Length: 162
Image (cartoon, rainbow, N blue to C red; front, side, top):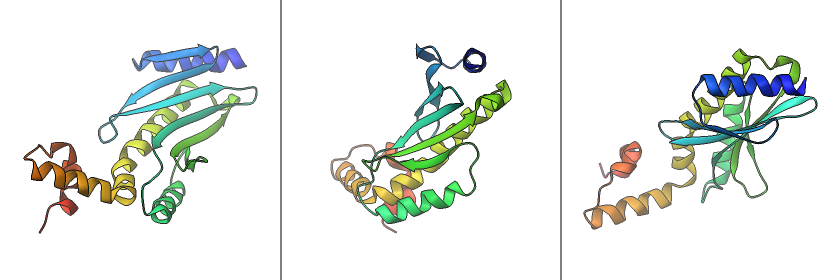
């Protein structure tokens, strides 16, 4: 069963032309390209009973922790296959486990799509809620020096004075 799940994962990663590594048999790491979050690294690890899915989303928020974590918990109610989790440092991850018997090419593709969608679509909101002061300072610093603010365009609506 273990080799079979690993073969399915390897096949899906290859067919989707995703660069991946397999550090040990059944332990895969791949980078999923995004738009807001430019890259999400996901690991898929085949175990005795299930495949564990894990992806880092964002570091520990600088501020507004309760609002960030509440927003993540509310998002969890609508998610498939993975859920937001917080580690002992407060860093934000996506985690899930899928039983080995459910590992098919369609399911692996669906899981990878879910990880990419949730990490990418949530990234700017996490930044707005948990890093607003840092983003505002960066914006003001760039404007004061005549530097480009292009990398902050996603936040223009609340950064620029009305």
